[in-house]
Amino acid sequence: MSKSIIIAGPCAVESREQLFATAQELCSLWDFNDLKLNYFRAGVWKPRSEPGSFSGIGTEALSYLQELQQQLNLSVCVEVGSPEQLDLCEKYDIKVVWIGSRTAVNPFDVQEIACAAQGRDLTVLVKNPIISDLKLWSGNVERFLKAGVKEVISVHRGFADGSENVYRNTPGWDLAIDFKVRFPHIPLLCDPSHIAGDRQYIAQLSQLALDYGFDGLMIETHIQPEIALSDAGQQLRPAELIGLLHRLNFKNPISSPAEIELSKQRNLINNIDTQISVLLKKRMMIVDTIAKIKFEHNLPVVQPEQWQKVVARYFENSLEDNEYQDFLNGFLELLHQSSIKRQRK
Ligand code: PEP
Ligand code: MN
Image (cartoon, rainbow, N blue to C red; front, side, top):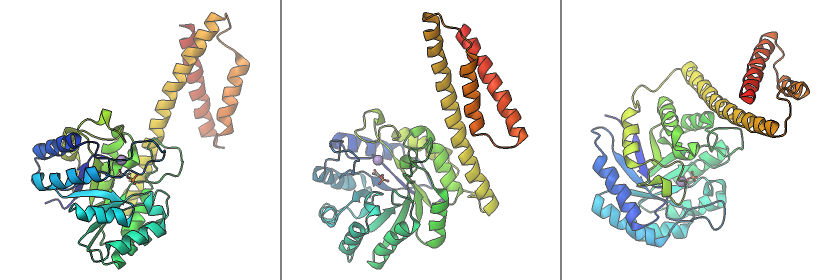
């Protein structure tokens, strides 16, 4: 029997139709014996970076969610960013809320919500703050525990640290694992949707989280992701989510520190390889554009001084050892030959 906690549902409620279509499809396709859809997620108020972006339909969504809970026997969770929003959730029978990563950076806001949560029948999911600060994250969890909230769950959604990455956010697995060590009794879920920002990476991130012993997943799911009003690139269709959950290995989390470390390093390599492959393709496409310009203006294909600058740029970032420099020379030779061949074509 898998004890994993699964949360799925759209980034945001956009309309009654979109909400019910997503939830109904999820429920009708759900064919697991040992996996429950513990909570159906849906944003009501969306904290967006830019004003004017879709920011949720607010209270109207709460009434649809209340109806959905009754009709489909689902437990719904929404994001709250203030005590007033908590009051509104209570009014519409929503008993599971999450603290978003942007709210989570402000202890004033989190404390106000924690105080307002006191004495209510609530489950609170605490997402990691968008900046990688373990104390801030664990402090937020403590605020809700101190307020006597009966069930506190934590959600790892990665960090916006601006580092080079194929994902929208840096996973920061180390920090999440440290969190788990500090709070062994608080379930820790992974939200691969907001780490990835792109649906193609959700499977690998989900498996990695399960391998690290996470207690479940929160995955954005939309009936028609391509027309979603927020986070369109990262949402899965219900059938895709079901397929993914079937493929994931929920058993056998890795336990030895060496294996965990190896797996983290491999993920970093995968990330870099994806970047290299995307950049190489882009480079070749630029070579084709250059070839066209040279052809139209009758310029020579091979311009040795230009190539020397390219070589120098690579050697600026070279490791000191001969082995690496041999590799770099071989690689650059290949790159140059291929570039000349394309241009002559
Ligand atoms: C969300 O879950 O839709 C969301 C906005 O998440 P985060 O706070 O992690 O960005
Ligand atoms: Mn989202």
